[in-house]
Amino acid sequence: MEWFSAEGYWLSRLVFQRALAVVYLVAFLAAVRQFRALIGERGLTPVPRYLDRVSFRQAPSLFQLHYSDRFFATVSWLGVAWSAGLLLGLADDLPLWANLLAWAVPWALYLSIVQVGQVWYGFGWESLLCEVGFLAVFLGPADVAPPLPVLVALWWVLFRLEFGAGLIKLRGDRCWRDLTCLYYHHETQPMPNPLSWWFHRLPRWMHRGEAAANHVTQLVVPFLLFAPQPVRSVAAVVIIVTQSWLVLSGNFAWLNVLTMVVATTAAGGALWGALLPVEAAAGLGDPPGWYAVVVIGLAVVLAVLSYWPVRNLVSSRQVMNTSFNPLLLVNTYGAFGSVTRLRHEVVVEGTADAVPGPDTVWREYEFRGKPGDVRRRPPQVAPYHLRLDWLLWFAAISPGYAQPWFPALLAKLRQNDPAVLALLRHNPFPDAPPAQVRARLYRYRFTDRAERRATGAWWDRTLVGDYRAG
Image 1 (tube, rainbow, N blue to C red):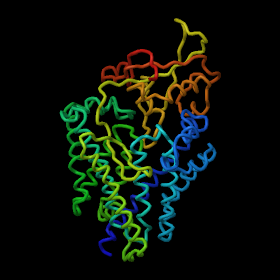
Image 2: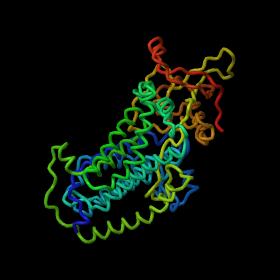
Image 3: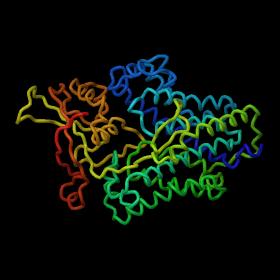
Image 4: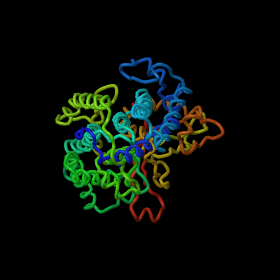
């Protein structure tokens, strides 16, 4: 079955599987550390309340059978341990059927989490991890050649991810067409990182070059993923390099990392053989018949499910980051169809005064990732995902994004709720809860070079007014 087996991608599969295990590990750790405050039984949007409104068919999840915070923690820690085992290669030498099951476990566990994660798990990289994780189930162990249909399915994911993002930009904000979006993006992106200030201060001709390179990478290069080698490997390297640029310039959780992970499958074994001290396996046997039938059946299902994302890609009303089935397979992707020109931040403050007056001292809560203290350098967070900080960026854009969780957040802060406080960098009321809390909206901008030298501040901010969730 020469058409079925892709022995030349043996090393590509090895790199992909190890790297995917790392992404799984980060994702499960984020779930362990944040779920109680966000979706736990006493969280901002509790899972039990959500499960009362949705059926298993709408949201297939282990937690439809049972939910408790202890059970969620068990599932998440099992995901951490399982991912670590996959990273160590413990599934490599398993029989074929057992290897498939080994990779199915983290997929099922993480899908279960995403399906009850509500707004906190509504990001494109969540559905991307579920889709890629599902395809990883069928790649097989070390002693079987990677099946070509599964590799093609992964390249199809990468195509939709890049091409969809390119189209949404071209159809969306005019600044992508006149190459000026990067004048603003590094400053107004959801969560700048330590290098974002310098990226923002690049000359404008470089910003235009960034935008032009983005169009080439997302609108032209994806088609080369289906070209023969070595063109396919060149396309993969271009995507990896451009995604690395995004990693350097901002915090986008594991979106860029996972995109690079998928791109590793398009790079042929010759490239990985030159980079890694690993010899590719030789003389791999033909796959068993049942395996070929399963993979061919998978290919047929994926082809049928591709109708909806393809229709979305060619539509003038293209939408971003949407799933068309409850298993989150064959999704549509995209990011930054519009770019905000001004950065606003919601700043939460508290006071010990029961009745605030003109002389009341308000003290600020500091979050782990989002801008707050103007003298604090933006931190490196990715590939970790600070879900509360990300949602606060959306809330600053429009109060409508703050429902229903933001009023609940303020209520938890008034109680000094330990789970919520664990998500913060600094609690200004460590001994007793505040008597009152409030939220204010500020306009933030990066300082220029002169301001940075004179003040040491990374940001300058101006009060806009009080903030109220819509």
